[in-house]
Length: 120
Image (tube, one colour):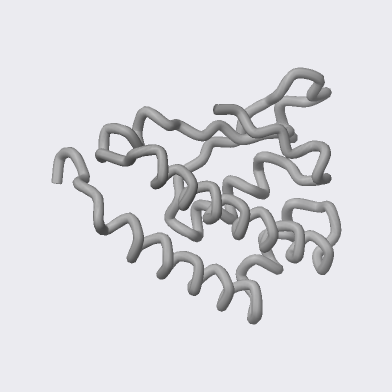
C-alpha cells in the first residue's frame, strides 16, 4: 500500500525515520506528482509481510492505530522542528519526542510479539 503524506505536509523520509524508531518497517517512496526523488512524498507499507505472520483483518485495524499514532507524533515533531529533515531528526532524538517514541515502540513490540515470526 502506498501512503501519500503530502496533504499532511510530511515527507516519506521523516515518516520512515519515526516508524523505524517505533520498530515498524516502512519504506520512503515517491508518489505520483513528486518533483524530486530526494524528498519522496509517501511511504510504502508491505501487507504481505504482515499476512505471512498470520495477521487477520482485525489486526490490521491495530496496525492502522499504530500508524495514526506515529503520524501524530511526526506532525508534533515537525511543528517544533520546522520542515528541514536534519532539524526533524534532531528533534526526534530529543527529550519529549524520544520518550513518546519509546512508549510507542514498547506498545508495538508487546502487540507484535503475539505473532509468529518466519525464520525465528
